[in-house]
Image 1 (cartoon, helix red, strand yellow):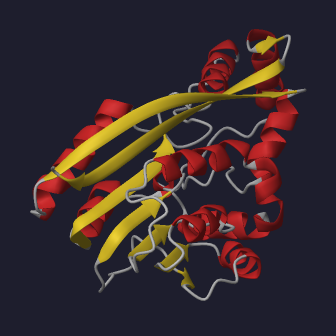
Image 2 (cartoon, helix red, strand yellow; image 1 turned 30 degrees about the vertical axis):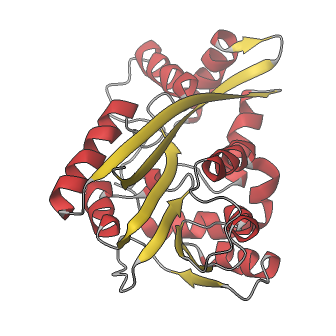
Length: 273
């Protein structure tokens, strides 16, 4: 379970350093743009963006749909402040809100979200709610992280627990969906929402980053505000983390440095042709 207050606080505190470290998230945003319908359209469409962060994807949307009305939502006030300062287009409205608590009263031609849905506590209910707000020709397009994300960290965490014989049921972060698991969640949301016939297009991609040290990898996570925000406890003993770092450095270092895997999932839900 994600602690939303802690999540909001961490993302707000690191809003000004986010773009310098969010290389994978920016790559995912560009790939989402490739999935957009009616590219370079001058239509006056209505767009809802969920988890806008610093507005990187927002600005890509403005370039693609210059006449669109865009409502960009983020949980963290610090992120919204940075996004507002960097995005001056009159067609964009920024809201600081939790999409899980919102009840949108408009219909949208495009609902889009980049690297955000992993932070939701009830993704099925949120998907169902969003699908009911699509126009008949609308699309829900999103990216999120899959179950192979930070697999090196999770394996090192488990190996350290075993080596130190720690009988604790914990992990260094939340668990993510596999591609097929998330596809099933989407299918069930379509069925539950009783939305018009919709089809799902999905894909996955592994993105690798390399760091000089394991601590540099941990710093990169912290600098985008994505440190562990689970309500559940995780092991914080200094001796444990020394062991974890030693295992990570030994098992997952090559000539490029220490490896970190991002498992990127992409979904497009739209009316069946």
